[in-house]
Length: 435
Image (cartoon, rainbow, N blue to C red; front, side):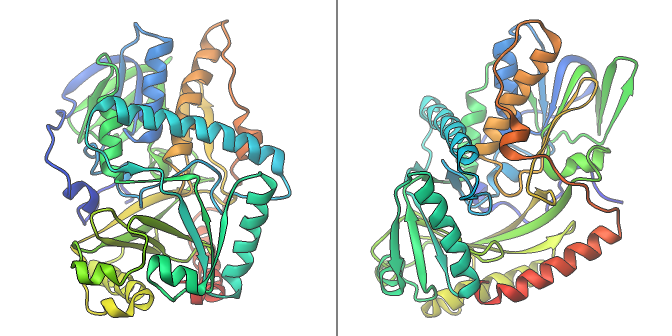
């Protein structure tokens, strides 16, 4: 039976690097609320804050299956993009992309403001990002992204193999682009900072997974291991696990991706790894590997995927080591200090599951690997939508369906699993030199 919440076998390395924090207690007993938000990630916290702004007297309760910083929001690679993801970019639909970029930049600035207001020591720097290709398949995708940047009037810098080697210390890639429109972050510290800026009236219960949801008259019931919440409005912001609560099953799947983080490397090693000491690289081909060099002298590689189930630690380690060592042969034999996985909600066409799915049930899921800044935007907009449905006073809301699309139908299991593996095998073969 599939879990309705994540239960990861490996500790989040980003969170392990941070000081311990006081964890909010789990929900106990049966309680009433005006709105319950499942998921204390970028989407859920943005929704909670906006909801409290619109309804200051409402009891807003957020529950999360994990702890702030340990769960999915802290398990990504730490890229907070101000513009569209490479796989979202469509140079032939520029007006839509320009509006997406404008809204995404606004959401990013709200994150920056929260981090600044928190007063916490957070590694969040507008360092830009590289995209690079190692083969013809990657070069084709890189060219498409270049057209998007040019059409959107966004600055970029082209790099050949020698320039990438000089700046990043790897000769693996043939060609690349650098764009300044990206923040690099320690993601666990960022979500901790955002959580600290919630209004005091918003209640957050950690280690409180939603195990079941149901309707009782006009109210929604959310079951947890040690209690139950009754609410008039329910928001699901738990990404791929939305489907495991019975919502959007025909449009949403879960895919695990994996990351490895080295210890701090010796200064002699770092001196040979290029002139840029804090950088991030996204693959031009979507099944390539993501790389980071952190400000404190570590290397991160994120790559590989599995369908609906975590791979074994041994397989993860071997795969990530191979990808790191091929890019940096001088590090052959270097192990990881931390290694972990995270679940990503994906839809067939990359569009989010967003909006009112049933009377009083609101959903924002299916981040497709872009759940930080875009999730902040979608969470806040979802609160606006819920209030427009309930009151005569209307708030201007972005047309999410027009901007980001609507998710396509996917066949049921086992056809979906078979289709995923066939498609992934084909893409992996086509982009085999990018892995």
